[in-house]
Image 1: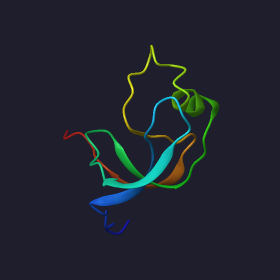
Image 2: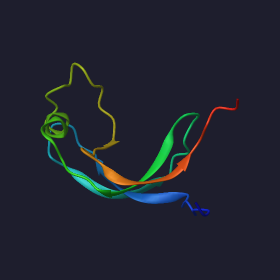
Image 3: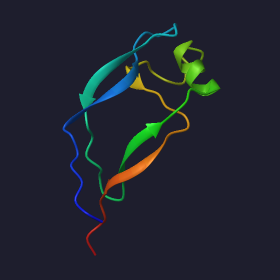
Length: 86
């Protein structure tokens, strides 16, 4: 596998307003994978009923509100992986 250039920032569809179906495209920092994690370049995604529950604030007692990137189910390709030193 050849080297892959990972951008420092990328575009994401961000849920931004509790209690409503409100999203916007923002440029956010690209996370770095921790030990045993992978970084996936998402190419396709959808919105499921669970995502709608978060948008409508149905789960307010379970999930504290924060701006968040929703995607269910995601599909893409692995860009980076990290492994524990052995």
